[in-house]
Length: 286
Image (cartoon, rainbow, N blue to C red; front, side, top):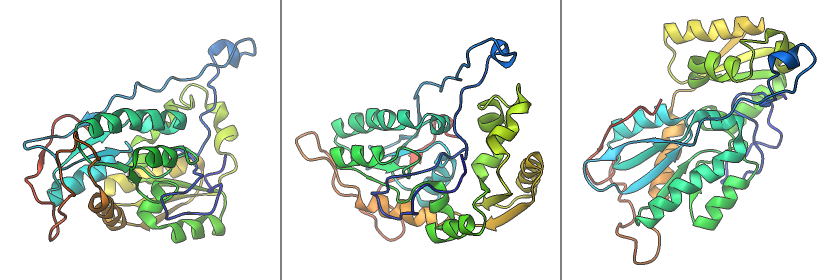
Protein backbone atom coordinates (compact mmCIF):
# COMPACT_ATOMS: atom_id res chain seq x y z
CA UNK A 1 0.00 0.00 0.00
CA UNK A 2 1.37 3.37 -0.96
CA UNK A 3 1.48 6.16 1.56
CA UNK A 4 -0.18 8.35 -1.04
CA UNK A 5 -3.64 9.42 0.13
CA UNK A 6 -6.52 7.41 -1.26
CA UNK A 7 -8.80 10.44 -1.57
CA UNK A 8 -8.34 14.19 -1.95
CA UNK A 9 -6.79 15.79 1.11
CA UNK A 10 -9.48 17.36 3.28
CA UNK A 11 -9.27 20.07 5.89
CA UNK A 12 -12.82 19.56 7.07
CA UNK A 13 -14.13 17.32 9.80
CA UNK A 14 -15.96 15.17 7.29
CA UNK A 15 -13.11 13.47 5.42
CA UNK A 16 -13.85 9.90 4.49
CA UNK A 17 -10.51 8.33 3.69
CA UNK A 18 -7.08 8.07 5.24
CA UNK A 19 -3.89 6.05 4.86
CA UNK A 20 -2.35 4.30 7.83
CA UNK A 21 0.19 6.24 9.81
CA UNK A 22 2.67 3.46 9.20
CA UNK A 23 2.28 3.83 5.41
CA UNK A 24 1.74 0.09 4.99
CA UNK A 25 -1.03 -2.39 5.48
CA UNK A 26 -0.96 -4.27 8.77
CA UNK A 27 -0.63 -7.60 7.04
CA UNK A 28 -0.47 -11.03 8.72
CA UNK A 29 2.97 -11.96 9.99
CA UNK A 30 3.84 -15.55 9.12
CA UNK A 31 4.65 -17.98 11.88
CA UNK A 32 7.96 -19.83 11.63
CA UNK A 33 6.11 -22.81 10.19
CA UNK A 34 4.32 -20.53 7.74
CA UNK A 35 7.63 -19.03 6.71
CA UNK A 36 8.75 -22.51 5.79
CA UNK A 37 5.61 -23.01 3.75
CA UNK A 38 3.58 -25.18 6.09
CA UNK A 39 1.88 -22.90 8.62
CA UNK A 40 -0.89 -20.35 8.92
CA UNK A 41 -0.07 -16.65 9.06
CA UNK A 42 -0.68 -15.06 12.42
CA UNK A 43 -1.33 -11.48 13.30
CA UNK A 44 0.31 -9.49 16.05
CA UNK A 45 -2.36 -8.34 18.52
CA UNK A 46 -2.80 -4.68 19.31
CA UNK A 47 -2.43 -3.84 23.02
CA UNK A 48 -5.63 -3.20 24.94
CA UNK A 49 -7.00 0.30 24.48
CA UNK A 50 -5.74 1.49 27.83
CA UNK A 51 -4.90 5.14 28.08
CA UNK A 52 -2.67 7.34 30.17
CA UNK A 53 -4.08 10.65 31.32
CA UNK A 54 -3.32 13.97 32.84
CA UNK A 55 -5.18 14.49 36.11
CA UNK A 56 -6.08 18.06 36.97
CA UNK A 57 -5.44 19.75 40.29
CA UNK A 58 -8.82 21.38 39.77
CA UNK A 59 -11.83 20.07 37.86
CA UNK A 60 -10.90 20.13 34.14
CA UNK A 61 -12.78 22.23 31.63
CA UNK A 62 -12.55 19.64 28.87
CA UNK A 63 -11.36 16.13 28.04
CA UNK A 64 -9.02 15.68 25.08
CA UNK A 65 -8.75 12.22 23.52
CA UNK A 66 -5.48 12.14 21.58
CA UNK A 67 -3.95 9.92 18.96
CA UNK A 68 -0.87 8.33 20.51
CA UNK A 69 1.26 9.50 17.59
CA UNK A 70 0.38 13.12 18.43
CA UNK A 71 -0.01 12.96 22.20
CA UNK A 72 3.62 13.80 23.01
CA UNK A 73 3.40 17.04 21.04
CA UNK A 74 -0.08 17.78 22.40
CA UNK A 75 1.17 17.23 25.93
CA UNK A 76 3.90 19.82 25.36
CA UNK A 77 1.36 22.29 23.97
CA UNK A 78 -0.94 21.75 26.95
CA UNK A 79 1.95 22.40 29.32
CA UNK A 80 3.08 25.54 27.53
CA UNK A 81 -0.38 27.02 27.07
CA UNK A 82 -1.60 26.03 30.55
CA UNK A 83 -4.79 24.57 29.12
CA UNK A 84 -6.92 23.01 31.91
CA UNK A 85 -7.72 19.78 30.13
CA UNK A 86 -7.68 16.12 31.00
CA UNK A 87 -5.64 14.51 28.24
CA UNK A 88 -6.14 10.85 27.36
CA UNK A 89 -3.69 9.19 24.98
CA UNK A 90 -4.75 6.09 23.07
CA UNK A 91 -2.13 3.59 21.86
CA UNK A 92 -0.42 4.67 18.66
CA UNK A 93 -0.46 1.05 17.47
CA UNK A 94 -4.21 1.34 16.96
CA UNK A 95 -3.19 2.70 13.55
CA UNK A 96 -2.40 -0.90 12.65
CA UNK A 97 -5.99 -1.82 13.52
CA UNK A 98 -7.93 1.38 12.74
CA UNK A 99 -11.27 -0.35 13.27
CA UNK A 100 -10.42 -0.27 16.98
CA UNK A 101 -9.96 3.51 17.09
CA UNK A 102 -13.66 4.41 17.17
CA UNK A 103 -14.69 2.09 20.03
CA UNK A 104 -11.65 3.21 22.01
CA UNK A 105 -12.50 6.88 21.53
CA UNK A 106 -16.16 6.20 22.29
CA UNK A 107 -15.37 4.52 25.61
CA UNK A 108 -13.52 7.58 26.93
CA UNK A 109 -15.86 10.10 25.32
CA UNK A 110 -19.02 8.59 26.81
CA UNK A 111 -17.44 8.48 30.27
CA UNK A 112 -16.42 12.14 29.97
CA UNK A 113 -19.83 13.23 28.72
CA UNK A 114 -21.44 11.39 31.61
CA UNK A 115 -19.28 13.56 33.88
CA UNK A 116 -20.65 16.66 32.15
CA UNK A 117 -17.38 17.53 30.41
CA UNK A 118 -16.88 18.75 26.84
CA UNK A 119 -14.86 16.34 24.72
CA UNK A 120 -12.37 17.24 21.99
CA UNK A 121 -11.14 14.43 19.71
CA UNK A 122 -7.49 15.07 18.83
CA UNK A 123 -7.47 12.67 15.89
CA UNK A 124 -7.59 13.22 12.16
CA UNK A 125 -9.50 10.54 10.26
CA UNK A 126 -6.52 8.21 10.85
CA UNK A 127 -7.63 5.36 8.63
CA UNK A 128 -11.18 5.05 10.01
CA UNK A 129 -12.66 5.95 6.59
CA UNK A 130 -15.32 8.21 8.03
CA UNK A 131 -16.26 6.03 11.02
CA UNK A 132 -14.73 8.52 13.45
CA UNK A 133 -16.81 11.27 11.87
CA UNK A 134 -19.86 9.08 12.40
CA UNK A 135 -19.08 8.76 16.08
CA UNK A 136 -18.49 12.50 16.40
CA UNK A 137 -21.80 13.21 14.71
CA UNK A 138 -23.65 10.80 16.97
CA UNK A 139 -22.14 12.19 20.19
CA UNK A 140 -22.00 15.83 19.10
CA UNK A 141 -18.19 16.01 19.11
CA UNK A 142 -15.57 17.59 16.89
CA UNK A 143 -12.21 16.23 15.78
CA UNK A 144 -9.06 17.69 14.29
CA UNK A 145 -9.31 18.30 10.54
CA UNK A 146 -7.65 16.28 7.83
CA UNK A 147 -7.07 12.73 6.75
CA UNK A 148 -3.99 12.08 8.85
CA UNK A 149 -1.42 13.74 11.08
CA UNK A 150 0.62 14.78 8.04
CA UNK A 151 -2.12 17.31 7.21
CA UNK A 152 -1.93 18.69 10.74
CA UNK A 153 1.83 19.19 10.56
CA UNK A 154 2.59 20.25 6.99
CA UNK A 155 -0.85 21.31 5.76
CA UNK A 156 -2.97 19.43 3.22
CA UNK A 157 -1.75 21.38 0.17
CA UNK A 158 1.92 20.70 0.95
CA UNK A 159 1.22 17.03 1.64
CA UNK A 160 -0.69 16.74 -1.64
CA UNK A 161 2.21 18.38 -3.45
CA UNK A 162 4.65 15.85 -1.98
CA UNK A 163 2.62 12.94 -3.30
CA UNK A 164 1.94 14.63 -6.63
CA UNK A 165 5.68 15.07 -7.11
CA UNK A 166 6.43 11.47 -6.13
CA UNK A 167 3.58 9.04 -5.35
CA UNK A 168 6.11 6.59 -3.92
CA UNK A 169 6.84 8.80 -0.92
CA UNK A 170 7.21 7.31 2.54
CA UNK A 171 6.43 9.95 5.17
CA UNK A 172 8.03 10.15 8.60
CA UNK A 173 7.07 12.32 11.55
CA UNK A 174 9.16 12.87 14.67
CA UNK A 175 7.11 10.20 16.42
CA UNK A 176 7.60 7.68 13.63
CA UNK A 177 11.34 8.38 13.45
CA UNK A 178 11.65 7.65 17.17
CA UNK A 179 9.44 4.57 17.11
CA UNK A 180 10.19 3.12 13.66
CA UNK A 181 12.01 0.05 14.88
CA UNK A 182 9.26 -0.80 17.34
CA UNK A 183 6.12 0.35 15.55
CA UNK A 184 7.12 -0.71 12.03
CA UNK A 185 9.92 -3.29 12.01
CA UNK A 186 8.65 -5.27 15.00
CA UNK A 187 4.93 -4.85 14.34
CA UNK A 188 5.23 -5.90 10.71
CA UNK A 189 7.53 -8.80 11.60
CA UNK A 190 10.45 -7.41 9.63
CA UNK A 191 12.84 -7.92 12.51
CA UNK A 192 12.18 -11.66 12.20
CA UNK A 193 11.42 -11.94 8.49
CA UNK A 194 13.48 -9.27 6.70
CA UNK A 195 12.80 -10.99 3.40
CA UNK A 196 9.31 -9.43 3.56
CA UNK A 197 10.74 -5.91 3.21
CA UNK A 198 10.29 -5.71 -0.59
CA UNK A 199 6.66 -6.81 -0.23
CA UNK A 200 5.93 -3.89 2.09
CA UNK A 201 8.25 -1.16 0.91
CA UNK A 202 9.74 -2.09 -2.45
CA UNK A 203 7.64 0.47 -4.35
CA UNK A 204 8.81 3.54 -2.42
CA UNK A 205 11.13 5.99 -4.14
CA UNK A 206 11.96 8.52 -1.44
CA UNK A 207 11.60 9.16 2.30
CA UNK A 208 10.31 12.52 3.55
CA UNK A 209 10.62 13.55 7.18
CA UNK A 210 8.13 16.17 8.36
CA UNK A 211 10.34 17.53 11.11
CA UNK A 212 8.61 19.15 14.05
CA UNK A 213 11.85 19.59 15.98
CA UNK A 214 15.05 19.13 14.02
CA UNK A 215 17.60 17.86 16.50
CA UNK A 216 20.92 16.16 15.63
CA UNK A 217 20.07 12.81 17.22
CA UNK A 218 16.63 12.69 15.60
CA UNK A 219 18.04 13.75 12.25
CA UNK A 220 20.59 10.94 12.46
CA UNK A 221 17.84 8.45 13.23
CA UNK A 222 15.75 9.72 10.30
CA UNK A 223 18.77 9.21 8.09
CA UNK A 224 19.15 5.69 9.42
CA UNK A 225 15.51 4.92 8.58
CA UNK A 226 15.99 6.25 5.05
CA UNK A 227 19.12 4.08 4.76
CA UNK A 228 16.98 1.02 5.56
CA UNK A 229 14.97 1.87 2.45
CA UNK A 230 18.14 2.57 0.50
CA UNK A 231 16.59 5.92 -0.42
CA UNK A 232 17.47 9.60 -0.01
CA UNK A 233 15.98 11.55 2.88
CA UNK A 234 14.15 14.82 2.25
CA UNK A 235 13.58 17.00 5.31
CA UNK A 236 10.61 19.37 5.46
CA UNK A 237 10.64 21.57 8.55
CA UNK A 238 7.04 21.89 9.74
CA UNK A 239 7.23 22.82 13.42
CA UNK A 240 4.05 22.43 15.43
CA UNK A 241 2.34 25.78 14.82
CA UNK A 242 -0.37 24.35 12.57
CA UNK A 243 -1.22 21.59 15.04
CA UNK A 244 -1.33 24.15 17.85
CA UNK A 245 -3.73 26.37 15.93
CA UNK A 246 -6.04 23.49 15.09
CA UNK A 247 -6.02 22.22 18.67
CA UNK A 248 -6.76 25.72 19.91
CA UNK A 249 -9.74 25.95 17.56
CA UNK A 250 -10.94 22.53 18.64
CA UNK A 251 -10.87 23.46 22.31
CA UNK A 252 -12.48 26.83 21.66
CA UNK A 253 -15.37 25.07 19.92
CA UNK A 254 -15.83 22.46 22.65
CA UNK A 255 -19.20 22.75 24.39
CA UNK A 256 -20.53 20.83 27.39
CA UNK A 257 -23.11 18.09 26.89
CA UNK A 258 -26.71 19.07 27.36
CA UNK A 259 -28.71 17.81 30.30
CA UNK A 260 -28.44 17.75 34.09
CA UNK A 261 -25.06 15.99 34.04
CA UNK A 262 -23.41 19.09 32.55
CA UNK A 263 -21.53 21.03 35.21
CA UNK A 264 -19.19 23.07 33.02
CA UNK A 265 -19.65 26.08 30.79
CA UNK A 266 -18.25 26.74 27.34
CA UNK A 267 -14.47 26.90 27.56
CA UNK A 268 -13.25 30.45 28.10
CA UNK A 269 -10.36 30.65 25.68
CA UNK A 270 -9.08 33.99 26.96
CA UNK A 271 -5.98 35.83 25.77
CA UNK A 272 -3.70 32.98 24.84
CA UNK A 273 -4.75 30.49 27.53
CA UNK A 274 -7.75 28.88 29.09
CA UNK A 275 -9.24 30.26 32.26
CA UNK A 276 -8.27 27.90 35.09
CA UNK A 277 -4.96 26.56 36.49
CA UNK A 278 -3.04 24.03 34.42
CA UNK A 279 -3.08 20.29 34.69
CA UNK A 280 -0.59 18.12 36.56
CA UNK A 281 1.20 15.36 34.70
CA UNK A 282 0.86 11.78 35.87
CA UNK A 283 1.78 8.77 33.82
CA UNK A 284 3.59 8.56 30.49
CA UNK A 285 1.77 9.69 27.36
CA UNK A 286 4.61 9.04 24.93
